[in-house]
Image 1 (cartoon, helix red, strand yellow):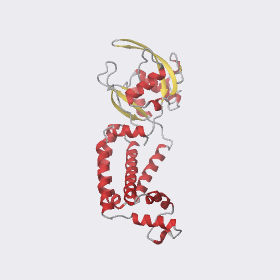
Image 2: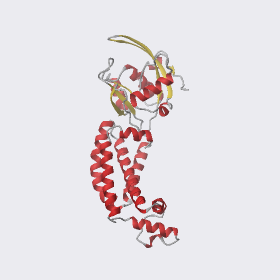
Image 3: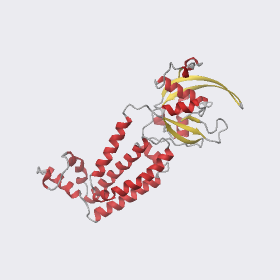
Image 4: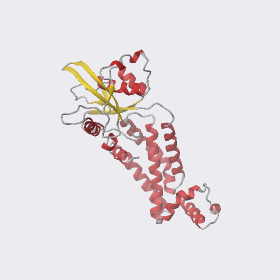
Length: 315
């Protein structure tokens, strides 16, 4: 995980799961290292055989030769420290693998956090002896899960979008879905400054990541509301987010975030469950990216909206 994602992860209610993993692995590791219940002696022996030019497979070692290169750094460390670090890193990779596996199907952060906690229970129970003994199958299993998740994320599947549900306390469009970031440009602020500020306030997106936003189009909106007429220009920007990033509202204006498919967001727009501004911004992205058929009667007229031109580039 990236450092920002790790901070976001721990700040999103996963402390219970993190504590569960930490305590379980620590208890298992102490039992293995202090109680000399370990299979790592075989790994250490294989490294020593390799360094001295002897046969790797003379002491019960059964893994491919490349495993020796993987374990060599742990062998070079002080024995107890290397043993604990080996178990800890293997467990950490397995935890990240489980978290990413859930992210392939679970689209709401709160539900993903709950399921991760429940998934951790059988995983830790099953893997406890392997943690204690320092078995390499924990690492191999973690790498297998991570590899499968990476392949699934690059298998050509349609991209998904983070959206936000507006707080019920908002005076305009309470409870409707919105783009993950949106806000008015205040007096004295530029577009780029506003984008960075709103990214941080509404979704916890750091400035360095927000600065990578790419310009889409701008659209003028003229709409009647109960409290008056809305007439404004919307500047649309695209921001690809890391797979492990989870938006987190910092200003209380968002009640929840959801990760939705293209079909789901189209259904929300059609049902009127998304604000007018967010619907137009989302449709702009869908059409520019070729994710929907621009010739469809369903989207006729969008290209003729006033000021349907490029948004300014961020400096």
